[in-house]
Amino acid sequence: MKANSKFCALAAIIVMVILALPYQLVAGAKSSAANKSSKAQWSLQVDKINPGDVDLESAFQVAIYENLLDELGKTKQFKQVFRSGDRNANAKDVPNLLLLKTTVQKYTAGSETKRAVTTVSGATKLNVLSQLCARDGKVVLELTVEGDVHFFGSNLRATHNLAKNVAKKIKESTLPDPSPVASASVAEGAASDATAKRPLSR
Amino acid sequence: MKKIFPILVLWCGAAVFAQTPSGAVSAATINEVNVTQIMGFEGTAKNTKGKLSIQDAALQFQKSGDNPAEVSVASIQDVVLGEENRQVGGLPMTLGKVATPYGGGRVVSLFSHKKFDTLTVQYLDSNGALHGAIFELVKGEAESFRSQLIAKGARVIQAENKAARQNAPEVSSEGK
Image (tube, rainbow over all chains, first blue to last red; front, side, top):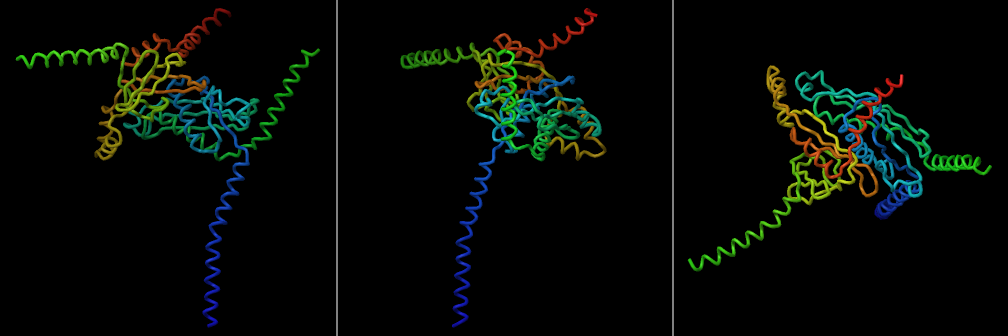
C-alpha cells in the first residue's frame, strides 16, 4: 500500500514537471525574443564599389556589389540592407545606419581555361579594403578581405567568394552599440551645424 | 466547291486579323537576343536563360513561359561591354575530364572553352537604389545591342570617364 502511494506521488510529480516544462520553454523563448527586439540593431547601406587605381572590369564591380548585398542580407546581422542611393535609408527613418565602403586594392585577372589545363596557374584574385562607416564618416570597422578562384568555377566566382568572406568577417567582428554611436554622430552633426552657423551670426 | 469557298474566305479573314497584332509587336520589338542573366536583374533568379529585348522605352528580360521583368531605359546609368572565356559542359564535363587517364582531361580543356560577351547594365529603381545586372550574350551580339540601348536613351558613364582619363595626362603634360 505504501509503495503504491509513493509510486502515485512520483507519477504526479513527473506529470507536473512535464506539464510545466513547455510553459517555461515558451516563456524563456519569449523573454529572449523580447531582449533581442529591445536591443537596437544596425542597418547597412552598401556603397558602390570603388575600383581605386585598379583596372577592374565593370562586370566585376557590379558582381561584387550584388554579391555583397546577397551575402550580407543572408547573415541577418543587420536589420535592413540598403542599396547605394536608396532614398529609404534616410536619417529620419533609419537612424542606426552604417555605410559599407569597398575599395579594390589588388586584382589578378585569371583564366578558367588556364586553371583547367595547368591546375596551378590562372587563379583570379581579388583583394579589397572594406570600411564600415557611421553617418558622420567615422570608420567603425576596417577589414582587408580576399576572394579567389583557384580550381573550379568561372572568374566571376571570385566576387562571390569575396562577398562571402566580407560577410563572414563582419559577422565575426563585434560592432559598437548602435545607439551611442548614432546619437554621438547626431550630436556631432548638430555641433558642426552650430559652428558652421556661428560665423553667419557674427 | 460552293461550300468550301465561304469557309476559305472566313479562314483567310481570320488569318489576316490574327497577323495584324503580332506584326505590330514585332515592329515595336527593336531587337531580341538570347541571353543568360548571370545576376542582378530585379525579379529574376541568377543564371536564368531567356530573351533580352528593347520594348518601346524599356529593357525587358523574359524567361520562356514567365512574365517579363523590365527596367525603364531612362533609368539606365551605364552600359558596359566585356568579354569572358569559360569552359563548357559544366559538372559532367569536369568529372569526365578528371576521370580521363594520362592527363587527357587537360588536353580536352584546351579545346572545350567558349568565348562570350558580357553586357553590364547599371540602373536605378523607383527609390533611387542602384542595381547592376550582368548578361551573357553570344560573341558579337552585345555591341549592337548596347548601341541600340544608347540610341533609346541609356546613359553611358564609363566611356566618358575613360575618355576623360585619357585626356587628363595630356592636359597635365601641356601644363608643365
